[in-house]
Length: 198
Ligand SMILES: N[C@@H](CCC(=O)N[C@@H](CS)C(=O)NCC(=O)O)C(=O)O
Image 1 (tube, rainbow, N blue to C red):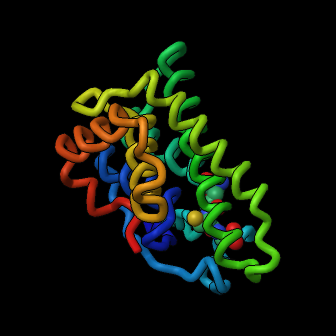
Image 2: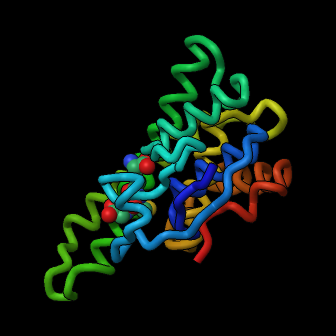
């Protein structure tokens, strides 16, 4: 299966890391999601990455549908089978995706708007969401070792994106989260190369 991707995307990183973690092979295929790409348009009418092109040629999106599919292929390696553990993991993944939404939105605001049209209150609102979510997750960190799960992988991918785009801005007052990131990386060296990269 091909994973239509771009190196910096936190959603792509989440999917690629979870597939590797679960032992499911996907081949990353770079596409241009920013300027438009016919390969991506054909697979995903929303023209967004990640998009998994299945062996029958169909595109599967979005990232949470893909991680769910990878979980089924792996016989349930990523998610617990039942509540309350399942609910806990699904909520953490949603929280990490929400951090991604706000952080990517922040980057897009700066990148795509002419300077005089950048709306500072909107940037502050987005950053407030990131900060609240990070503080929330720091109070209840997921496992990093052999008992890591989809929520752990999602958090590692999200922190990887913050490291790439917001280094020096997110870490203050979050020593536990920084230590969590380092512990995850030490326990899963095979996943670090799949984190968001410029
Ligand atoms: N909810 C989607 C979000 C995916 C997303 O926003 N991807 C960005 C790249 S980081 C993208 O494709 N942006 C191009 C666009 O929205 O046109 C998911 O979880 O897969």
